[in-house]
Length: 312
Ligand SMILES: [Ca+2]
Ligand SMILES: [Ca+2]
Picture 1 (cartoon, rainbow, N blue to C red):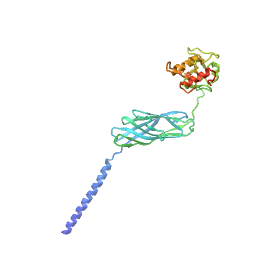
Picture 2: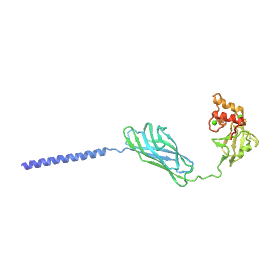
Picture 3: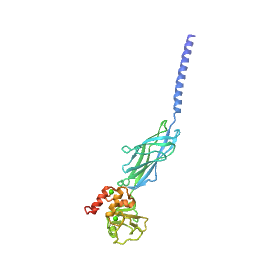
Picture 4: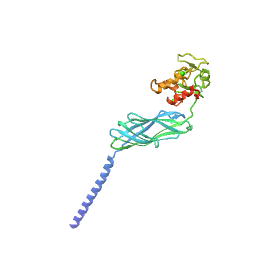
């Protein structure tokens, strides 16, 4: 009888023990089955797969496939990484993602950005990269984003790394493509700058290299002869091309082809905010070629008029 009692107690204890163990196992199991996987996908997109040295390429970073993230994400951190043959030249926030000087560390390429509302999908940033002029032909350049984490304010969600790659190829040169260059003048944004006062059309043409026929016309569209003196505001037109260039004669602000006391007066009026120069007049007034009008331009032009300095 006593033995049966002991046996009963032992069995009971065993059963309680087994129950405890199994309930514990169950508890562990059930907690692991309740654990959800939170994630989102990151993609880098570019319209190009083949690039040439000097090309600028835009890359979009896109968020998608949010899984078990209530409402959406509000902030994101990560790091860019790219080949030596590339330069990152611009980062712009998209669709309410803010990107300013506080968002990026150029030393380690880490970025952080916050959104203006919960985001569930779409572009986060547009990156502009430039393929270096000396990039090796035949190699592949890659742009990556890594170590990306986002948050919805309640928890941190990790995303995959993403990458986009480009093969760098030699630019195919169209032998018929229009080209224009100069050994003396600056040709930029539809302007030919730093032409010296009293330059004739024929002298000007000697410093222009192009594979098209060109003409110089005045403001009224009248073609100028080889002996004509160039004036600020005249234009170089190109046959069979949708291109024309406004000529800027250095120091000739009023467009009479010479730099004299009248032009000097215009710089003075600009400097004291009486008559502000703009457009080609502004360009012509920049005699020291630093792209702005300052007291230095006045002194420079004065010295030229006194014969103590020249424009070249
Ligand atoms: Ca003048
Ligand atoms: Ca200047």
